[in-house]
Image (cartoon, rainbow, N blue to C red):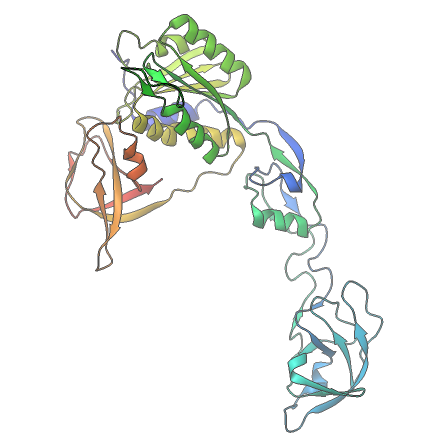
Length: 408
């Protein structure tokens, strides 16, 4: 039988008390930094843009020289030269003059605005301004995007295309990032067969290792696939010892219930101190979930049922991968909905009901349970948009009651 069942909050508190720290960091080039977790705060050493620049093609002018200009009474200014992009201006603008300029080029000395080329006409060396501009119009001021000394990115941020663009803008070509957690993934059970092999009578294909492998990738870890281990204590212990040597976290599935070959809890307890932390959580699905700690390395033994395994991975394993990777705290993604039918809880256990969302013609969002028939159905999560959490002290959620759906 299970040891004392922990509530979900107690299980999470147990994990939090481990005070697992982020992994070490390394330097990587900006071109290889995509999806890595920043391990340092980044401040800019200079203003962006580093000079006043034109935001349009046209003429750099003194705004006061254009006041009152229109198509009937254009203001006539003398062309004093051209400012090219990528170089310092070789001209300056004095009263009554204008300098040709292109988008992105520095504003020449003396000018304080730019007239769009569409609002000008040029005849010989005379520029006719057909519309007035105000001071700083069509000018991006020095430091208006990023100021020197400004913090632009913080440790813990995921480096995606936008963040990498910011790093490039402030001249960073090499950045410090956290190491990616390596997560061992293995399945147990004499009935489990790897996909691609012949499916003999009484066997099933290994769903869990592949779905958990993908789940590890989705939350920023590096999965290490270790295949299927039979229900043999000696082989199981050897496989787990090798997994601990190679990775930072171990995630298994199967062998955690109360059957004669469910060796996982006693096996993970023997791999090192402090050993078994809990074996059983008062939730449905996912009750047999087990956690052990060997040194500083957590071992999560998840149920064999695919939907249960993936749900408990999301609830308990994913936050640990995020913590080790140095990622900022997870943001919850949830929506309000109305229960499509009455949903019952399992007596005395926190119950998670997988639901699919639909929007009615009136615009209301309705959540209906995904019919599975058994917790072993992998299609439960494939069909579901999220789940509804029913507390252990609540008997049911009534039809049309407002609920919160946690999105996958």
